[in-house]
Length: 344
Image 1 (cartoon, rainbow, N blue to C red):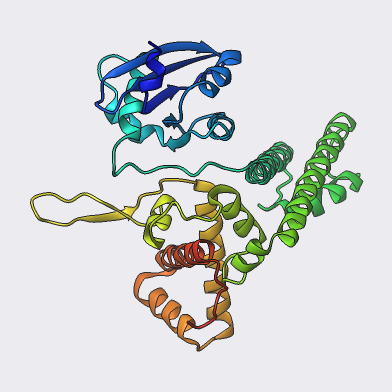
Image 2 (cartoon, rainbow, N blue to C red; image 1 turned 180 degrees about the vertical axis):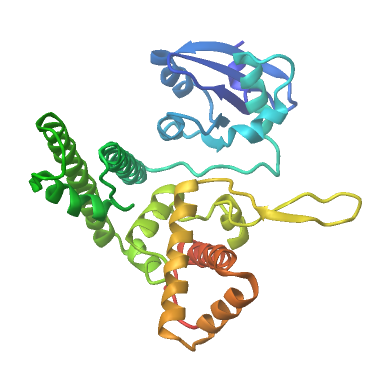
């Protein structure tokens, strides 16, 4: 008898070259416990009857989810921290697969939506751009630090470095040696190359933004720009995996942490869970909106709410509150396919 015909739910512990399968029947009895190599995984799953398959949302999980789903299987991805509670005994690959199999069958489990190839391409652009921005900041700080050792101080900010370095190289009376001038010239050229690389990725993201109607709908929200809109679409897609706007905002870490016991509710600062990159973009966008509202003295309903919040709670808390509000609006626009209505 082929026991794989009885499998109704399966957990797969993903690896680079080896994969561990744990399957149970409709009574929860273990009927499959197998280790497979990378080249045999898809062939084995293609020959099995359709079942529910759970995996942790780790490196390569979205690729495997797309491949396995083509065979008709119901593939579910879960955050590793949600699976950990179901792993019994010491950590090993089969115990992990068993915990995944148990977790995917829970009715209240939260799942991660499988990304499309287009989403992963767009997310890769953001990740590479982010690394270029980080490298540019490091390069600029190194230039500022080295010049400080020679008594030349440049103010913080990439713009100040761009402007001052050519002036410093041309100044023959600042005490710099020819050796250090050559080094500084090389550092400046490298900074220009990194700067151009970051601009190139900005342009690529801008092209994707223009081509996708959903990104343009999201950017209509005050405080949401090209980067925020494309990053949200790349990470969450249509966002229908969230039941409401609060769940979406909680996934970004924009809601308060809770530490309640004995009937006493205690709310703390924001949880800072989920995607730090998107959370940062939304908060920076909210800060820009607050500055605009206060500078232009706007008097619409949204602006009055922002002003009251700034007066009562301060700019920082107001920025987080506005980012939270924008996140909930973004969920509504994504999940319902609606257009943003100003003042509603």
